[in-house]
Amino acid sequence: MFLCLFSFYWMLHLFSTYGGLNIALGLLIFIPYTILLNLKIPMFLVAFGFAKRFETKLPPMWLVAATLCVLTDYLAPQVFPWYWGNLAGKNRPLSQVAEFAGVYGISFLHFAGSYALYALFKTILHSIAQGQEKASEAVMSALKSGAWSDNRGKWAVPTLFAIVLVWGYVRLYQMANVEKQSPHVRVAMIQPNTRLPRAGEGLIPRDEVRDILENRIPSLVGKAAAAGPLDMIVLPESAVPNNLTTQDNMVTRIEGIYSPEFASMMQKLATKYKATVYANEVAADVKLDRVTGRPRPIEFNSSIVYSPDGGRREYYHKRTLLAFGEYIPGAEFLDSSGLIALVPEAVRYSRFERGESAHNLTYYVKKEGAQPAGTFLPLICYEVLIPEYVRSYFDDSNPGFIVNITQDGWYGKTVETYQHFGLGRIRAIELRRAIVRSTNSGSSGFVNLSGDYVEPLLGPRLSGQEVEEVQVWDVPVNWVDPTFYVRFGNLWILILAVGVAGWTTVRVRSRK
Image 1 (cartoon, helix red, strand yellow):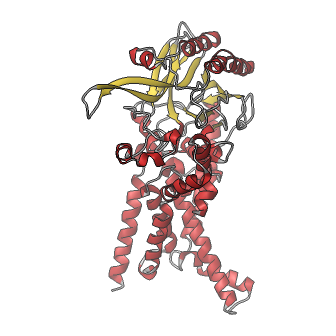
Image 2 (tube, one colour):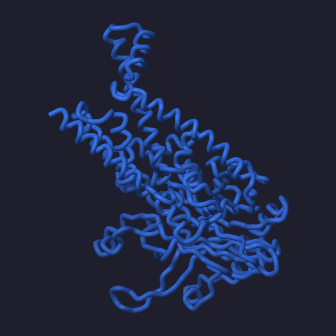
Image 3 (cartoon, one colour):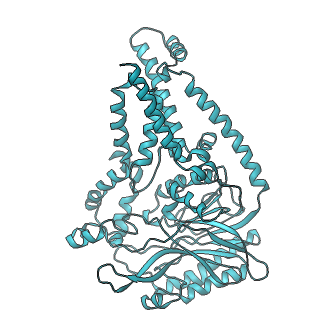
């Protein structure tokens, strides 16, 4: 509970400000989140505590701890995905292992090193407490004995870390050269800080929406253009409020969400700056209801590309929806039982359908009309946190970079936006693709092929929260073959688990 309050307190802001709940009821609803967000902690503690009972029959405990860490990281269900490896993700050379083993590989190293240090210091302190040795003698004795490895394969951990760190520095150097030799796309990130309607407010007034479309966003794009000709303009999630869309069909007109002003703004930005414009919108369609058999309207959290000639091109429907934010698990049961009343009003009903496929989108160059220049990997909000989902885009085509659009305004001016960015940053190393992160209210930024935050040509390195901002980067387009992690994914976890289980079996048999 303490860890969850410390790390995820921003959920209370969502419940109170946008759900209209008082603090007491908010805390009550927060308790299930505590369990769902942190299941891996009790899972690991139970498994490791059980393993300690049979310590003498197992492989070195640093290996057991690291293996259990990876398994709970991978198997524990999560509402807001975070991984043990993220705790060590800011270590630049160490984090390069994600190219081969994903964020789970960093988790393995993090726990292997943590347990080795724990075992080493425990041995030293025990010797001192028992009066067996002086402090300096206890340290030297523990180092010589290899206390970090339970006296088995005592050089395994230091050797592993030495290899990983040297290799990591080599890869950092190589990635810097790759970026210099890669083609670049000049991308402008627009942060309009469009406000969200609070509990009981209803939709944003039409005059305010018109001002956003006709003045605020175009003026911010004009500021970004001061850095020079733009190749791509990225608008974040919820930049245009009230779930409006540029999709013109019978459903969007009946529901009143088609906005000719929105479509006009997109066309004007694309043709004026001769750039690809990428933005978030709500898309609508119809499907047959499973219960009544009648057609009913459905909506998608979607994104759309406009080419430099002003044409409305490809779209992407978000596939990984946020539980309790974009859909309610078991909503039908909750509704029929009346328990739906306990769910915050802002997230009470399932709003969006899941998209059909994870596919890349085309960006265009300003030649005669609009010529396709390549593809980028589109991710909406939460999707950037799930490594297995992100690597699935390579089944469609080989994207040159990643664009993540999001709206962190639901959680107020809190640490959530930095947590979100930090957790998603590892995807750049796993895929060796740069990430452009565009948020509506902060914090936006750019991550290079090495997983580093980069100073832009224009604007701050990380945009402020709840302010209007622009940033411009020359984004490296990396079309190299997919990384080892993209090709083989988490297969190494299965091999690791089988290997440790096999080692354990051999030791048990030999000690009968």
